Image 1 (cartoon, rainbow, N blue to C red):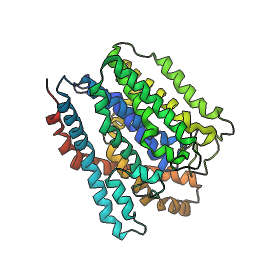
Image 2 (cartoon, rainbow, N blue to C red):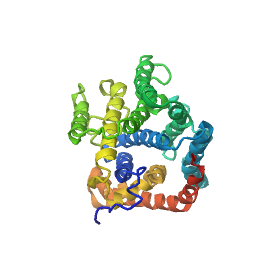
Image 3 (cartoon, rainbow, N blue to C red):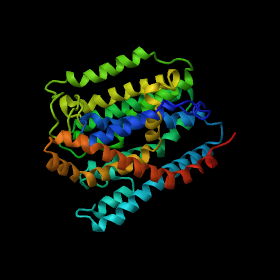
Image 4 (cartoon, rainbow, N blue to C red):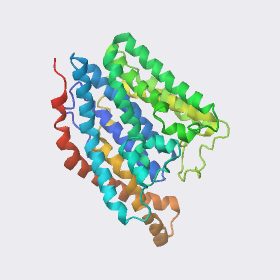
Amino acid sequence: MPHATATQADLTPDHVPALDGLRGVALLLVMAYHGNLLGAGWLGVQLFFVLSGFLITRVLLREPDAPAGAQLRGFWLRRVLRIAPAYLVFLAVLAGIAPFAERPPAAREWAMALSLTYNIGQAGGWIPGSHWLGHVWSLCVEEHIYLVWPLLIIGLKGPRLGAALVALFLLGLVTRILMASHGGAAFSSPHALALLTTSHLDAFAAGGLGAWWLSARPGAYPPGWCVAVAGLLLASAGGLVPDNPVWAPAQQFGAWATLGWPNTLPNGRQFLWGYSLFNITVTLLLVWLTGRAPQWPPLVHPALRRVGRVSYAGYLWHFPLAHALSPLVFTLHHWTGAGFYACLLMWFPLFAFSTYAAAELSYRLVEQPFLRRKHRWRPSQ
């Protein structure tokens, strides 16, 4: 299939085609992680966080001047139209299946998923995080940010906004350090910190800084070599941590090839600085793509962009599907006698196809009817 040709919609100032492809990359990384193929694939969630900070800040900065109340109301209503329908349908379908399942989620899990406090429940140890709903912690983080983010962007302008975003970035880093310093206390373990909204302030702030920079410094884009150097530093940082099993299978998490970046970053207290380093690198990439390479060929292939367009529904459905289809891996092993990793490679295309099919159905039947109504809630001058 040839690379995507730019359409008029692609070339509007508010749309960067390469970012569609980057969303697709983020989803595929997460799927590879939950498919036990790539231990570093969890970074796809972190990529989603930085992308969200970048995109929502960019949208808010580009909106016409209007009363603050109208802007806030419009932003929140558009977010509800974007997030709620697919999420509620997802929960309803799982609830319909649950009575026939062997180990359905407990009532407390459903309640925390509906109230968008699932990440807090997991971090506090009040819920285990099931194979059905364990991934919705990241959606809870994003929704918490969406509640307060427009207050910051709409309330502050110019250099004050930039300074506030830098302060938020540092606050995310300092919060992790302070909470981790209380060893043994609630929410102080690397796993708990990875789930809390406050621990990811630097991800959204980094993305927001990228959008603010593009608005405040038109034409001041990082060169490609700068992004490449940042990527190399990120790739090598994990390997520089003492006693870090970069190439060894991450048996603790049941996934291979963490590349020095295992989930929750336990080695050398990476969770204190590793998230921030990754967030900065992704922000440089976003600014470069938006300013210099909006049609960068590796990211604008039609198939990858389509995966990116349905990535929200894909993220919702991939996790329970991975669990439902996982017995097939052992069936393949029994039939072929191949090793576990080889069976995973044979199994992954079925998992990917099933996830994409569910995502397309959700996008077309549930999301699009509501997305078409979003324009009604954009403030006008």
